[in-house]
Amino acid sequence: VTVRRRAKSTRTAQLGYGAFNNQTGQEIPLLNTPVANYSDLTGNDIGYRGGNAFTGQSKRLVASVGVVNGTNLYIYHANSSYKAATMVHWVAANQSDLHGPGNFIVFGDFNCEPGDVDRNLPPNTRSYHGGPTHNVHKTLDRTYDWAIGNVPLDVRAIDVTSWYSQGCCGCLGLFGVKRYNKWDLPDHLPIVISWR
Image (cartoon, rainbow, N blue to C red; front, side, top):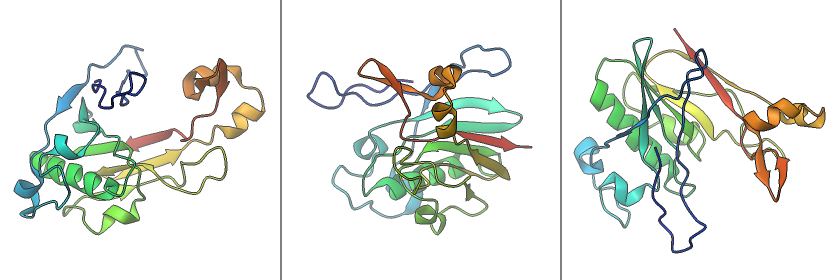
């Protein structure tokens, strides 16, 4: 799922998402997931310029990975702004409303801490995280990559920083980013999510 460029600069574009089946190596086609208006979900006006439509507030869409073991999976990358917690709450409320008692998990870079969202999560929905994941280049001091679901989850952050210092070349293609023609660490650690 790709998102069109939203800035005037030709070099600026929003991130897209991708997924693959780790058993077959095949790409999993992702679909855009509509998100209801904020006022329809909560009964309140969002109070931010841009209105109550999700696409008026979020730089990125919610992507559906599909159903895995009876659980609906979604990816979301929240705005890196003061709105992040509101956007994550909005997505959680939408998925809870959409699935009712059905199982769902939303995961991604939420650009806010789980505690910023926990008090506003829908009933029977909670956050799961595996510790700090952001600011890899300095000190891992923020938990921005985590999951929300209405099923019990185990989320682990994978600390790949020691792999790089030990020269793990195979890791570069999996977790690295290429900057100025050389491989470097990304600013986030990857996470692994498990459920039954």
